[in-house]
Length: 68
Image (cartoon, rainbow, N blue to C red; front, side):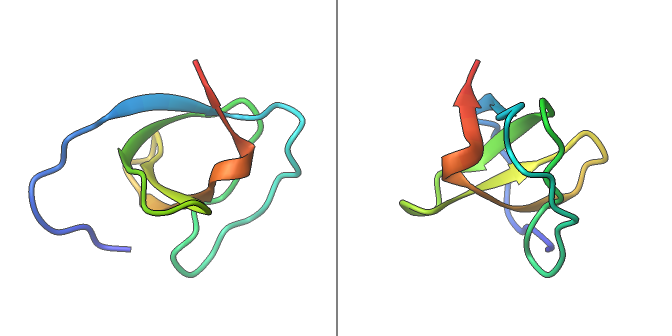
């Protein structure tokens, strides 16, 4: 997923340590338990656009994200 425009990080959130890990793919980031992600956009009720430590962008299900 390429992200155009200026990037502003809204906040950081953590992937729930109890979440099921997923490989990601398409526009979705891989889910790694306990990973801290930069939140770029609260896209909708279901997903959040995030950036991971490898500087990759993608969507993460809102249900697995915890506020720090």
